[in-house]
Length: 256
Ligand code: IPE
Ligand code: IPE
Ligand code: MG
Image (cartoon, rainbow, N blue to C red; front, side, top):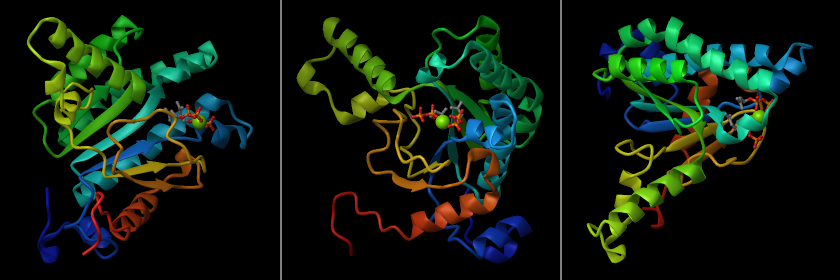
């Protein structure tokens, strides 16, 4: 959804329109939701409490995306490296996804959100897989916002799986190695059909990619925020977009 006439906008949208240019929004924003554990520990609480609060912060980010009209929002909820955490924390993170797919699904659907869970399906519990499938099928026709939850995801695995798919086509004799293009590999990644992120936000003061969308973030603008994810507010999202709009993207060319 693109807004051109400010005076016909809903009030919350118009409010953001006073701070950012609603005609020059990132099409796809990706978020590394980091710092839940530190947020909880600094309050003398268990790490899982931080993860639960993190869901509320994600809902604020989703609400903001809907208010301003960002078409694609990715949020990294569980990396393949996170399996190395204590079993109780891993279980807790699986349960948080279960709860979200259960409790929040109707609301997501009513708000026009198309939900996709992006990541490897290997090693995920079968009941969770069924819930993911149900959620994706139910919300597939929705067009207001595509919400991509990266779960059991990492960027290198994404590239490796795409490479395997291409290798199988070469092996089958339907593709020559010389014919492989950037677009072809993109079409075999887990984000096939989704535009590359224009803006990536990572919270908690950590300045690294940690194997997130390695292939997709080639020309992405990075914004690193000091605060931990549970403290993330709509205004932080707005400020990040302001930075994005002032950054001057060149894609290898020279500025006008
Ligand atoms: C991010 O918060 C959420 C996940 C990785 C699941 P962390 O759990 O990494 O929190 P910190 O970085 O330890 O504070
Ligand atoms: C990245 O955060 C993964 C998610 C936010 C889900 P981590 O906390 O796992 O990353 P590192 O270990 O600090 O690089
Ligand atoms: Mg972390």
